[in-house]
Amino acid sequence: MEEYDSEKKMENENLGPRMDPPLGEPEGSLGWVLPNTAMKKKVLLMGKSGSGKTSMRSIIFANYIARDTRRLGATILDRLHSLQINSSLSTYSLVDSVGNTKTFDVEHSHVRFLGNLVLNLWDCGGQDTFMENYFTSQRDNIFQNVEVLIYVFDVESRELEKDMHYYQSCLEAILQNSPDAKIFCLVHKMDLVQEDQRDLIFKEREEDLRRLSRPLECSCFRTSIWDETLYKAWSSIVYQLIPNVQQLEMNLRNFAEIIEADEVLLFERATFLVISHYQCKDQRDAHRFEKISNIIKQFKLSCRKKEWLNITSKDLKMNILLFIKL
Image (cartoon, rainbow, N blue to C red):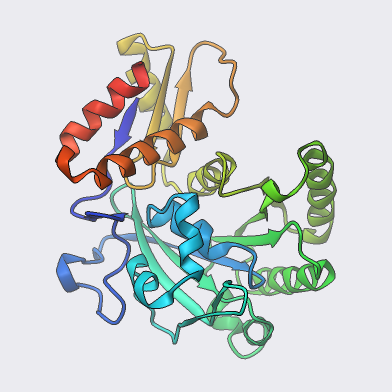
């Protein structure tokens, strides 16, 4: 397996990959600089309040593990800033009576991938007031120059009709301002559905979303923070943003043939999302890539928490490879 070394000096002792400078500090502070040559891709992350966007983003980009996301709603003061998000619009969070985190307005984050590819991630708060503003006063600002729209649905939402209404409003704005944008729908929190009902429920939601999305096309994924499905979905999303991906895949194939490997995986170094792979033999487990991503990331985080291990980046790579072989 190969790791794509796309991040330099962007790892924090406890959190892993750095995103933006700490809250309130401008780009360029603490050694963080957005390169002038960077290829920026605007990504909208949208969905109703409570759909799970913040937990999802924390796991993928801020090196949280699933059980740690529960603390996002426990205390804002000591955990929100640790996401290291620099907001250009007013952004704040509150905790409601049952401990759920409510995100307000839009948080802008820059996340670097594969060298000069920078995801300009717009995490749009899901309260009704803000959702309405997105489609009226902020419509052009939010929906122009969008490469990808990711819409998150809570599979157990009691306001499905309203969810679909907001989704259709997003599509109308996208069609008007960014007609070439790619659309991804994540049917989230699938772990809350009885296992024998998951396939049926997801299929029904997928059919509804595809129908509502016309004339645009959407790709649908079932996701949960508790298994590999989250990595599968985000790997597919990031794959669509990679420039010259055909050349990357050709190089990976040449590498695999040179070392006579049955299969080679290419991971993004900071997030451990699967960027590409090559195989010359059929494999049994269709979910093996995402499982490996999850295992490696949790192993890396576990090592970081053990201060006495004193593991360097170089040592960590070696240990991960040995761990996978065993």
